[in-house]
Length: 284
Ligand SMILES: Nc1ncnc2c1ncn2[C@@H]1O[C@H](COP(=O)(O)OP(=O)(O)OP(=O)(O)O)[C@@H](O)[C@H]1O
Image 1 (cartoon, rainbow, N blue to C red):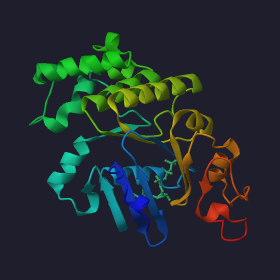
Image 2: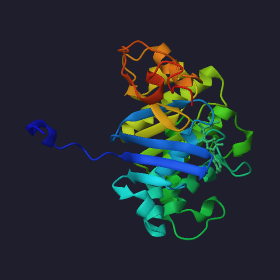
Image 3: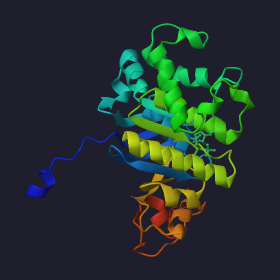
């Protein structure tokens, strides 16, 4: 080790160390995943359906626990955390889903207020049961996402793009430090998808959020994130900054049988099986 290895690094927002998740003896959703996401970074998970993206995201807030290995989030060892610690951690981690998960019959504003439930005591039924400060915050966040004029409309009367904006506002009312997004634009048309991603990027920058987001659209990913993490059958096969990453190299993540890439891709390193020629253990 030389002196340079002792330069203090910021504590990672998210750290996976040798994390594997086996749902059954034959279903491996995560396969020895090691990665770190630094505070303020916008990292994208790419990979085929079933490659483990959702499972990885669920490990970040302890919705699922590793079979082996360690997940540390905001300094908390998720696997070793008790119920109260996990609950506290989850308040610091917002989640946005593909299907928005709004409560359809409730107003937009009440949906956004539910983002504060983690820090309030007891259940809330009806907008007026939320403290005024929460309602004010909810309106402010709706304003930020361009939905303030819909505050009193039923959530299930909104378009998909509008619902996702409201879901982002709900996550922001939680005042998270990390924002997880599981294919947040997969149900949206391309133009709306780009708008929603731009919105997430803007609020993430403004609030200095760490973002971990799974996407299926490579082109969106390349233009949007700081970094791409590619999964194949649960293993990390690509982990590189998006700057300079070639589309073909990102697309290789989707190869079912492994792709032989240039020895030194322009935009980062291909790890694991995808770096091997097809037929040399690349197919998994
Ligand atoms: N609760 C579960 N029980 C058993 N197997 C599961 C469970 N959750 C996920 N899996 C399996 O783990 C693997 C990874 O699934 P995961 O949902 O993480 O993939 P994904 O990349 O998010 O897929 P998609 O893009 O379709 O959402 C798949 O083989 C899936 O069938």
